[in-house]
Image 1 (cartoon, chains in turn purple, brown):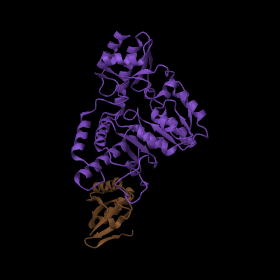
Image 2: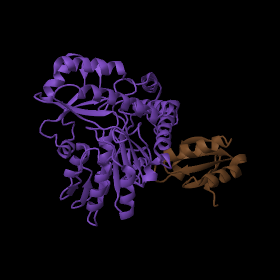
Image 3: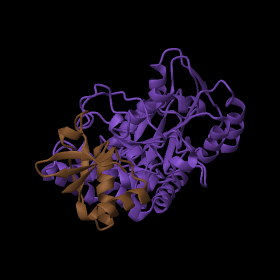
Length: 371
Length: 83
């Protein structure tokens, strides 16, 4: 199989990730439930995971790195901590349902959306400047569109939010492991990310970086402050009820070790090289529209569509030829509306460290037969 | 005689213990005894009496927060150390 769906989940992982998961399952229990060896090892693994994330993503103290089940979990905590009923929230226009659905669940929230063309960060910032007015209470922005790989100018967005005193939530689902993610340099309130994409961890892992505290969306045991029937008022305990996914954290720790060793810049270059190779090949085919730009505005995520082809039908045909990619709206109807592709959806290629140019050539060869 | 540095969470206790270990001070994490932990389930870092002075210096240098420090004597319970 040629696997080009890493924007959903990286399938191939560094071998040390599964080794770490297996070791954790065999030798660790729950942290904070005892002083015996397996519990102490679990506690040490969680702390190491937090410390590595704090180092990678510019968080001063590891206590402010929350272990979540995925980015959606972290975004729910972030949104529900900052957005109150009736609040006005400004969105980038490229958001995933992981942002828009939690917002929709809060009564009376007014959502404003920035609509600026794809791959035009200059126009995005102009529109942001117009729309980031006094009524806006929270801004939520993805760093990279999961549909188009469009890199939003988060540094400038964060600076404007800081200047106007507007709290910022960043969705780093498609950027963590590839681009600089800097909670404190940005002055963001929360940054959420999954563990199972660009950080090469297992599914069921994620991180929420917090500037301060937050409101729990799950209450329960924390192994601390047990007589108190309210959740502890300190991190990470306040936002981590119940038994941790220790094998997941062990795998994520190993995945982040891989990212650190190879280097996010090198990983990004590899993926964008594959994206450009695929894009150039697709552009030569009749009736194919490719959503692509060169330079720093796009990661290794590439959307395209083909005239007279239903995206789902073409994805099925490609799957029958052994190519795994994602078709449709990618859980991001808002992004498709902004790009003008909501009617058809797109087919999305997304790469990882383990893809090769040969796989891209193989995919292009199949496409030449099909369209 | 030994000292317990009581911390508000396991993560903080780990950070304190790791920092002390890196400074060459043997430190062990344990559940706080109920006598000093009326709110239930907290964690403490145990250090030997001969290391206590250096422990205070390291904690101050690294600005690591803690809830309190107790001196423990076998069979005689715990007493909070006023600093």
